[in-house]
Image (cartoon, rainbow, N blue to C red):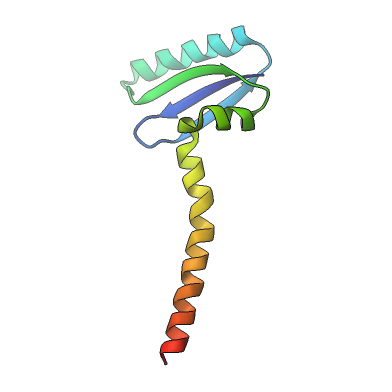
Length: 93
């Protein structure tokens, strides 16, 4: 599979689209580069990668998926923190 990556260097957000052939992914990637360039959005990075799966791509090119990783960890950590705070406040009484 071929993955067209649209990565915002400022916000670290990444979107991807899966394609079955390289030429289609590359053609659309070039169109998107032109759109971002015309809109003066230099923070956008457009790349095409070949990988067996999106999970493989996330493992080998993890810098493109930093925002996604932070989001997936924040929820559980916050829940643990709130439980700990509740226990602390209950014991303080």
